[in-house]
Image 1 (cartoon, rainbow, N blue to C red):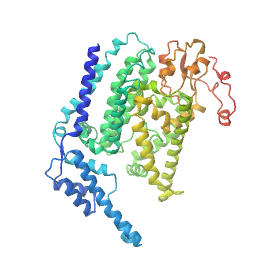
Image 2: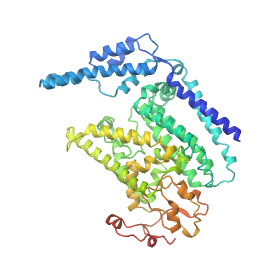
Image 3: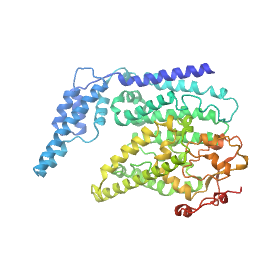
Image 4: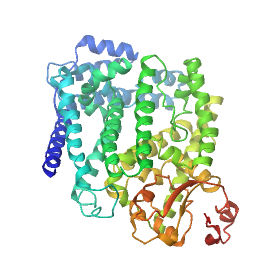
Length: 540
C-alpha cells in the first residue's frame, strides 16, 4: 500500500511540474490583420496605442509570454502617459473642451487585461495545438496521482474512527518545510492569477476545448480557476469520505458542498453564459458577492430582461430573507458548511491543516474586530455605490465610489479572500478567510449568536479531556473548555462542520437545533452584564 502511495505522489508531482512548466512554452506574435481586428473590436481611438502595439507585437521574433507581455504593457503605458500629460496641460490652461476631449483616447482597463486578450490571439505552439493531450499530462496525471496517494488510506487507516495520533508529526501538516513549500506555491498561484493573468495564458489554452463546449467561448483565467477549484474539491472529497467514513453527517455534508460548487458555482453560470444570459451563482449571497450592487452588474442585469430582473430580486431575497431564516433554524452551518464554495474548499483541500487554527483568546478578539470591520466596510462601499448609481454623482460624503470599490476589491476580494485566505492554509489553518475576513460569515454569525435554534450541546460528565475536539476545530474554538464545563457552544464563529463531534471518542458533543432557551441573552452581552453560563446549560 505504501508503494502505491509513493507512486501516486511521484505521478502527482510530474503532472504539477508539467502544468507549471507550460507557462514558459510557446511563442507570441501578431499579424497586422489580427492587431487591426482587435483594435477595431475595442474601438480604440488613440493613434499612439495603435502605433505602439504594432511596434510591440507585429514581429517575426519568437517572443515568450514575458517578453510579449512587457511590450504590451509598455505600449499601454506610453499611450496613457501621453494623454495624461495632455490632460494636465489643458487643465493648467483651463481649456476644458480640450481637456475633456483627451479622455476619449485613454485606454481604460488594466494593462494585464489588454495583454491577456492579445496573448490569447497571439499564442502559438504545442500547448495550443494539443490541448487535449496536455490536459491529460497535467490535470490527468495530477488527479490520478492524488487518488493513488489517497485511496490506500482506506486500508492503512484500519477501523473507522478518528484518533489524535500523528496529526502534528508529518512535515506537510505540522508547519514543516513541505507546508511552507505548499504555501509558497499557493500564494504564487493566486498572485499570478489575480495580478498577472497574461503570464499563464498557456493554462487557458489547455482548457479552451472544455470551455467552448460549456459556454461557447475560449477559456479565461477564471475558467481555469473554476475548473481547478472543482477538481481539487473532488479529489480531496475522496480523502474526506475515507477519513470520516464512520460519520454520516460528514459524508452528506461533503457531498452537499461538492454539488453546490460544481453545479451552482461552475456549471450553471457557464451554461447561462452560452445562452447569452448573465453567468450567475445562485447560491452566492451578498455581501460575499460584494460586486452584486456594482454599476456594471446592475446595468448588465437590467439589460438581460426577465432573467436579469429575476436574478436581482433573488439576490435581495436571498440576502435579506432566506439567509437569516435559515440561520435561525439551522445556524450558519447550512451555508458555511453545506453550500458555500469557500467553505467547501476549506473543508476538502484545507482539512489536513485544520489543526493550525489559533485557539487563543487574543486570536478570538482579533477575529471579532477584523471580521466585523470587513462587514462594515462592505456595507459602506455598497451604500456609496448605490447612492452614486441612482444620483449619477461620483462620490458621497467625500468618498469616491470608484476608489472605495477598487480598494475593497483589491484588499478584500483579491488579497484577503484569495492570496491569504487560501494560500495560508498550511500555516494558519483552513478557515483564515472564514474566521477573519468573510463579511457574509460575520452577518450569519450575528444572527446565529443572538437568534438561532442551533447549538452544540455537551455532556461534561463524559469528557475525558483528550483534546481531539479542540485540535480539530478549524474555527479556533477551544471546544474542550466548553465540554469540560458542560456548556453549550453558541459561538458566532462556529460553522457547524461537526468535526469536533466526529472525532470525539465518547460522544460528548452533539449538533442540535432546539428551542432558544439556554442561549445567552444578547441584551446582557451588549450591556456587558455578568452572565452565569452554568445556568444556561441545557438539561437535556
